[in-house]
Length: 221
Image 1 (spheres, helix red, strand yellow):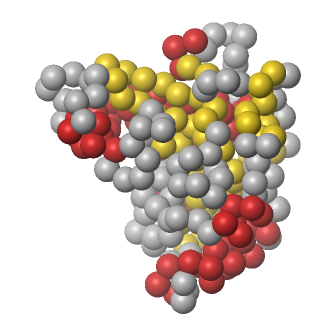
Image 2 (cartoon, one colour):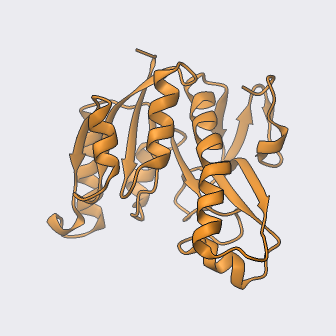
């Protein structure tokens, strides 16, 4: 069992969750996932976690009066597992500043766009409507600003004339997200990556721009 204690928050299919499970299992991430929490009882990712022997919990927004109450309950639940990394993997909730502050510098998110372009939802349709020639995904530290935290690594691909929102989503997931998210979590678990004063520190240097997937080689892994 690796040294980093990881909690993963999901709301859906859990494909990025599965990539993290696999990376922990094969040693690419020096850590273990202690708990997977979903905001939806029907999230398919729960079955992925259970198949891997990971504790799961469902925390429904409908059972809480407001976002502050929900996030307080979520924090209390996570406290039982004392995670030093919290990974958002398709968690469809806007987190309160109090919750973000609780895990500041230890919480990552994967977003399906080339941030700062297209924060928020429906990114693939918006990229097509904007006529973007490139699209991709970004791993970033979570801050109080929605999808606005310091960017760690991005991957990009060329938008094809025949792309639809669905085809673009599938290519971004398969070709980019499933590669860059385990890598970023692995760096954080090895303490090679930090957020200091809202800047990214990586292996002894400040990043002026996010790392690029196409630049990854053995020196980055």
